[in-house]
Length: 149
Image 1 (cartoon, helix red, strand yellow):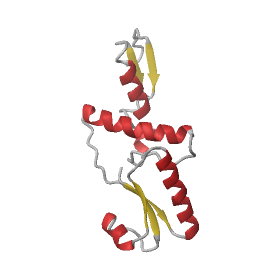
Image 2 (cartoon, rainbow, N blue to C red; image 1 turned 135 degrees about the horizontal axis):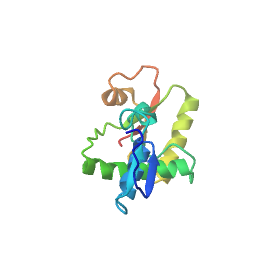
Image 3 (spheres, rainbow, N blue to C red; image 1 turned 135 degrees about the vertical axis):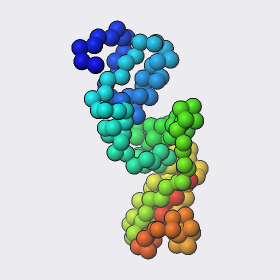
């Protein structure tokens, strides 16, 4: 598309997850939105390198932008995914602790999550239960923060 000109109201640079969501939202208000991407396809930059986790909203200090946006993003992604035909496999996540000081960090994450309105969070210390959730879990894990989604 070299030397092609477009009339637009809004140009968004980058067709990753954020750029595409912004374009979709702004497209509700104007039809003249374009997305400019340097890669061969959408989502091939930073978005491609993400871990595939929809963050629940427990990581970050209370009142922080990170904590707030993680939780809001989780809610919005679950809203948009069915509309866009994006399948979600809700397998939950485990944050591992290998020593007692790391358990204290898990307790901090649990507090942050609860303060942010998350109800499906718990610290599990029972190794049999952890093995049921994740059969390949290392024997070095002494506890884990479990988020169901």
